[in-house]
Image (cartoon, rainbow, N blue to C red; front, side, top):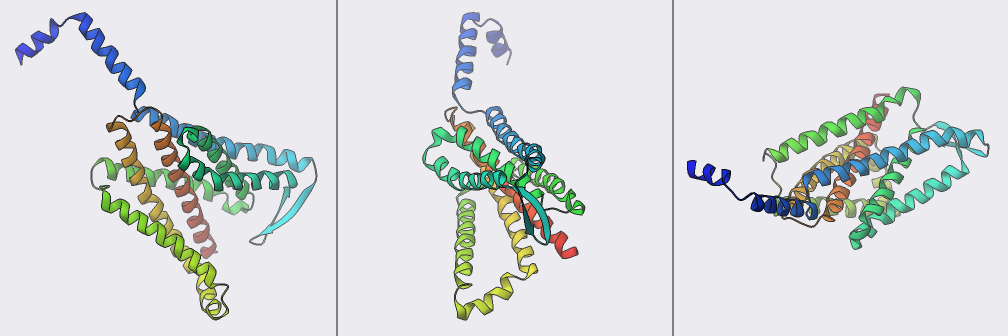
Length: 273
């Protein structure tokens, strides 16, 4: 132990500077936790900016005229043609951006930014359909999303929740089962013989409430997979550009979780009323 300390104290300062330079070079070219965290925060800020854009522009557009009356869940609101067009474009971007990100990861920074901006815009767009006594729900959904994400992070970092091949296979089976199950139910509602059986089940508020709970659980589990992807990206020394990949996946899951928590709270509130 003494020899090691002595050797370090008399180490060549030129070699020490060279070693520090090598470490800095490696850090600047490989993915880091801080880099992924910063890029994830950037995406989430873009979602907030998207929501702020709608909140700021909505009263201005209403004042300019050309507003249309829309009714949803018994609530009448006014929306302009320009807002409807932008919402349609935003929906299109939300639909195609995951596919672009999947096949061209070099565009992830741009695609992720557009995705988060559009997601934030549409979340704020739907908030105008909330009555004054429901305005607390989006904020409560945000707080619950942060809490769930923190709990899942603690479960992952402490090793209580382990992400392996079986876990990923389970998630894949669950998500595919959910997708194909939803498609089968949708097709079944168009078949006369099955329609009369499915519609009462699908339209039952209890069914929607249970499915919302299931989707919140699935979204929470996907966060574990994203945490594992972040750890793998850093510990395997992947290039710096892969920080965008990990950050996009994490931001995508967080926004998805927020939407599912929001849907669950809205359904719970409607059941209470």
